[in-house]
Length: 93
Image (cartoon, rainbow, N blue to C red; front, side):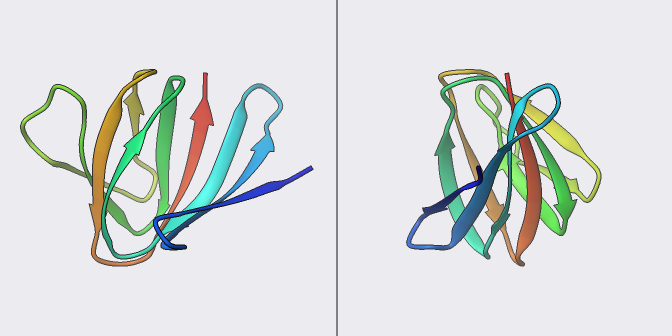
């Protein structure tokens, strides 16, 4: 069963599913700046576009392009911004 989620007035949409090993979401982030919270460890991979993020404990924004990944610890928050629609795959755990 697929669960569809919307955040930030529909500017971020994701579809949750189970991979062979981990729960995951695939989605699109529209142009803008957002702050996301985590309940468990996340590995986010940019599929298309570019995402600039400010990770917990960091002072410098880092940009990730298609095929690049970053990790966020559980019970943390991070900021993300993009100038164009950006697709991602996020695995949990």
